Structure formats: structure tokens, C-alpha cells
Amino acid sequence: MTRKDPLVDLLIHDLTGPLSIVLTSVNNLLNKEDKCEPYNEYQRDTLKRAQRNAEKAKSLLLEIIEVYRSEEGLFRKDRFLISDILREALVDAVEVAAPAVGEELAHAEVCAYTEILARNGITIEVAGRYANTPFTHDPKKIRQILRNLISNALKYRKSRMKLAITGDLDLVVAVEDDGEGIPPEKQDYIFKRFFHVNRKKDEPDGLGFGLSCVKNLVEKMRGEISLKSGEGAGSCFTVRIPPL
Image (cartoon, rainbow, N blue to C red):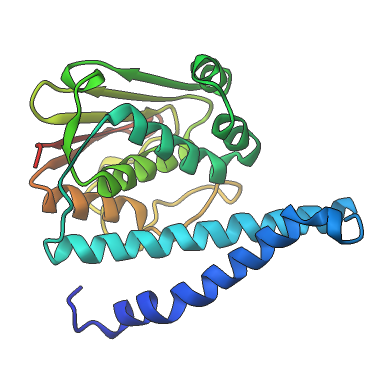
């Protein structure tokens, strides 16, 4: 993408406003139910479905904008705790994959956080320098990378997902799932935009944008991404990002 790409201009200028109006309207209806007639279960579920899908569309739009910004070399330099960004990314990803669990996480006390995740087959390990020391980079882009890796693992796992963060200089993130894995002949294509690994009909689908987005961001951040997978053996994506 470049600044002259008319599609990017359309996304940024012509879709952001209408999407915000839709979200605001739906949120108002849900939050001010006491001022209207009580909703029946079908009406309430329909509004919540509209809310979730509008949030999903908003997230995709923001991801496209962040990829565009990275291709222009636009990075914000901040010091931040990885644990804070990780929590935000987890809630974002889980709210789409399992809205009830995401809602529970969003309102959970810190002491209950790990228990909720473990109960839902999600293991988080943060060690090394950045367990307690701030990392220096663009927090929005780190959050986006984490969110996409977590979303991908939640989408294709059978029952478990493990995320491990380590590193003493570079930030190292490994996200592993126990899904069906990716055949060797398709691993060269997994990071291409709009590519889909063939999945069963009952498995979730998407735009095929998330992993290509991660790869683009990581490479613009002078980092690396690798995949370890095999058919029937699950997948593990590992990202290494140097500080800015």
C-alpha cells in the first residue's frame, strides 16, 4: 500500500464515520434499554450480534490502517509493560471467539484472571526481562500482533492455546495451539493475504488477513516470524521483535 492507494483512502475516510455511527447507535440501544420497552430475548441477542460484528469490522479497519502506517514507516515510540498490552489483546481476541468469556475477562480482578483463562484452556507465561521491565516500541502495533496471533490460535485450536513471552533484549512471543496443524506444502503460503488453509465446513472462517498483517508489521519492525507446524500436530508461531 502507498499513500496514493484509493482503497486505503476509502477505508480511512469513508468507512470510519458510518461504522462509528452504527456502533454508537447499537450501544445506546443496549445501554438505555430501561428508557425503552423491555427487549425480548431475540431482540437483545440481535443487538448484541450487531454490536459484536460492528466491533469486528472496526478492528479489521484499524488493522488495515496500522499496516498502512507501518508501510509508511510511522511508528510511535513508547515505554510500556507487556502485561498491560497482553491483557488488552487477550480480551479483544477472546471477545470475538467467545463473547461470554471475553466479557468475564474484561471485568475480572487481576487475581481471577489466570483462573478464568485456565478454565477455558488458555495458558499464559511471561518471563525474562519484560516480565517486569517496560518494552520500548509502538504499543498499538504490539497489541495488534498479539491480538492476531491469539485470535488465530483460538480459531483453530481443539481445546488448548498457550502463549509464552520471553526475551532479554528482543521481545519473543510464541503462540501455540493444539489444532489440526498446517501441511508442509501450505506453510509457504500461510502469510499471504486472503489465503486460506482448507478447513472443515464447521470450522471458523475469516478474511485471511490476520497472519499477513502480523508478518508485515513484524518485518517493518525489523523483527522475524516463524512457524513450526505439521498436519495433525498443531501450530506454533514465534515472533521476535527488537526494541525501538
